[in-house]
Amino acid sequence: MSELPAQPTRGSSLRLSLACELGEVRPALSIVRAFLTDQGVGEREAAQCQLALAEACNNAIQYARSGERHQPIGIVVTCDDTQIELRTEDHTPGFEWRESVTLPPPDSEGGRGLFLIRSLMGQVTYLRGPSANCLVMRRRRDRALPSSPRERGGTVEELQRRLEEERHIVTAMAEELSSCYESLSAIFRYGAESDRSADFSEFPRRLLHDLLHITGAEWYVMRLLPEGESRLTVFAASEPGLLLEPLVIPESVDPASPLEVIAAVRRQDAWFDPPGLLPPQDPLALARPGSIGLVHPVFFGETVVGTLTVGSSPGKTSLTAAKVSVIHTFADFLAIQLVNARYRQERLNGLLVGRELEIARHIQRSLLIKTLPQLPGVSLAGYCESARQVGGDFYDVIKLSDTSVLLMISDVMGKGIPAAMFAVILRCLVRALRTQAPRPARLLAQVNQLLFDELSEVEMFITAQLAFVDLASRRMVVASAGHCPLLITTAGGTGYRVISPEGMPLGVLVDAEYKEETVPLERDARVLLYTDGITDAENANGEVIGQELLMEWLKQGSLDGRSAEQMREDLVAELRQCQGNQVLNDDQTFLILAG
Image 1 (cartoon, rainbow, N blue to C red):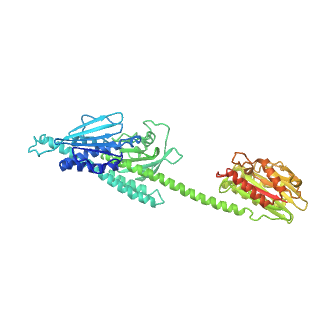
Image 2 (cartoon, rainbow, N blue to C red; image 1 turned 135 degrees about the vertical axis):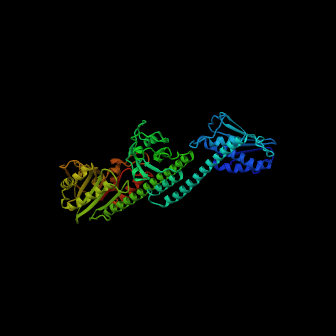
C-alpha cells in the first residue's frame, strides 16, 4: 500500500489508501478487520464486511484501465453503535448498478461479486462521477441472536432459500478456487519443465491433457499461426482424428467460415454450445459431430498466434465461467511459452549461423596469402576487410619467376557466404591457369567462360583486375573485367596514369572479350589496385575519398619514398578514421606495389 498508516486511528472512522494492485488488498483487509474488532464488531459480522470489501477492491482494481492504474484506491470504514459503513473510491469507467441483483447462472463470467456484496451488506449504493466513483455499503450491526425465524427477518422457507443461495455461492467459489489451484500447479510444473527442455513439442500436450482434467472437457485442438504465414495449422490434438487440415485466414469472415477462423479473425471466443451450432461443413463438426465447447484465440500481446478449441460430447455439462477462465489462463501461458520457444530457437539458429560464418571467415582468411612474395627492388603490401564476417573482395599475388608476378584483385557482387564462395573459386581458377598470366586478357576470357553458367544461374557477377608485372623488362600488362581503374605514378611521383582497359564483368556475357594495356614500370613508381569500398569511404565531414584524393595520396607516397608496407598503414589509418564507430557498408580491399 502506498499510504497505510502504521497505527490506524482508534475511533469510529478509518481511512486507507492503497495502490491499484491486487497484492495491496490483503494487508488493507487485515487492518480493516482489526479496526472492526476494536469497535466491538463480532467475528462473523467482521468477516462478512471483510469479504464484501475484498470484492469491492478487487473489482476496482480489475476494471481499472492502464492509464488509471496510477490512481490509488480509497477505503473509508465508519462504525457506530447501530451501523457499519464501507466506502471504496475507484477510478474505473464505472458501471450501472442494478436495483435488483440476482444470482447469475453458472456459465456467466460476471455478476457473482455484486450478488455477494448485496447479500452480505443490507444497503448498497454506487455513485458515478466524472473522475472517480464511490461504492457505499451499509449494514446494521448485529445484536442479540433473535429467538425465532420471524424475529430474524423471514419465514423458515425464506431462510432455507437464502441458505441454498449461500451454499450455491460457496460451492461455486470452492470450484473456482480448486480450478485455480490446479491450474497454477500445472502451469508452475510445466513452466519449470519447459525451461529445462529443448523440445517444445511435448510438454504443451501434457499441459493440455491436464486442462481437460481440470475443466471436465473431453478433447482439444490447438492450432498455431506460423510466422509469416496466413494459415492455422494443428500443433497439438488430443486424438488422431483431430489432426485436421490447415485453415487459411481470410481478410474477412462470414457465418459459414470455420469457427476457428472466425475466432482468430474476430479476436474473441467463439462458442459451439448448444449442439448443432456448428455449420455441417465445419472441420470441427465433421471430426466431432454434435459436440459442445468453445474456440479461444490465443494472443501474445496484441498478436494472434493461434487458437485453442476445447469440447465435449453432447449431453455433457457446459463450460462454466470458472472453467472458461482456466482455459484462458492455460492459453495465455502457452502463448508465452510458444513465443519464448521461438525466441530461443531463433537465438540458437543465430548462434549456429554466427559460428558457421566465423568458420567461413577463418577459411577465407586462411586463403589470403599470408606473406607476399618480394622481388628484387620492389615491395608489396595488401589489405582486405569485409563488411560482414565473410565478403566478396579478394586479392592475390602469384609469383611466376624471380622477376615476375601476377597481381589480382576482385569484387564479387553482394556480400556474405555466396560472394565469398565465388571469390575462392576465382582464386583457384586463376592459379590453375597461371601459365596464361603474361596475357591477362586471355586469362580473364577463359575464367569468364568457366564461371559463366554458375554466375548467371544465381544472377551474380564479378569485377576483377589482373596485372602481370615483369621487372626484367620494367613493364606491366593490365587487363580488367569491369573493375576500378589501376593507378600508377610516373616520373618520380610527379605524375600519374589511370589504367582501365575495356572488359565486361565476369558472368555477364559468355563470349566476352577483354583488352590489355601495357605500361612502363618506372623506378620508384607506386601502383595501386583497389575495390570501390576504398573510394566510396566517407570521412567525418561526409566527403568520400574518391579517386582524385586517392591519387594524390599515392603520388605523395612516391615522392616521400615510402615503402608499400608504410603506405598500407597510412591508408588503413585513414580508412578507420573515416569509419569511426560506424559499421562498414562495403568490403575494403587494396594491393600496393612500390618500386
